[in-house]
Image (cartoon, protein in one colour):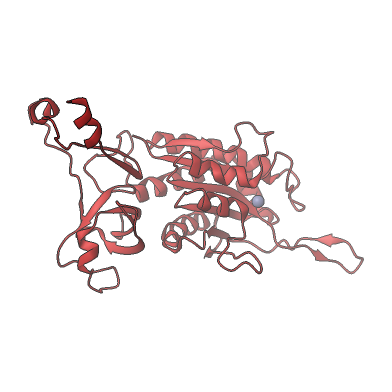
Length: 328
Ligand SMILES: [Zn+2]
């Protein structure tokens, strides 16, 4: 099953025209960039949802963010270009400093483990655009401790998406940045770059659907004996005895984060090296002859367990009573 990504081309069609490069309009250019990124992500095996189906659409920020969680997306990515705050000239007119440049990435305060991926995306975009990376940052809502300032990030995280970003691709007030983003071949380069990093992060190989036996985001895992956390401390026995969902992963560094327990009783958000993880339910050997295990083992009062696993969630249904009744 393909992992889903929600792309959010920022603003509406006519929003944020560059004062220093008037051909550039953020709301339109980010829509075009999103189309290219969508195609590149699809090539790499993702299913892509987009908050603006048409260039004239401009949904509420809350709806944009919530689309990610509602559709079980593994990532929400809002595409923007930046602008500094305006300044006032001596004659009282507004102006925007042209020299400010650089790429910046924002992620949710509630998901510190997303900084790694934010840094990878931001560094790569800044290098491609020929300016510097201003960093991956969180921004807090004034007087609301722990609450994300940006509506799309806040709503994506609150809707259950564990990986939400805004990428500011340079500053559209900076003429060279705006000129770069206006060129279609450069939009294509950004799309390929970002899609490649995202595919690498989530372990998706072009032309292949995900290997079912590999540990990835959403897998249920157990921790082997003798394991230590990413910071070197020992993993306590009670954690090793439980089964956990992988929350996020970095295939390059091997740093995986486990969070919720299968039984839903714990959320520990703990980084660990992937070498200490094993799949809790490894797939069955395909050579096992096809048989009907239920008809062989089902006797009155038998307890059967049906596990339905989907990306990121599991349901375990024990229908003992119903079966006992059936055999009466
Ligand atoms: Zn913007």
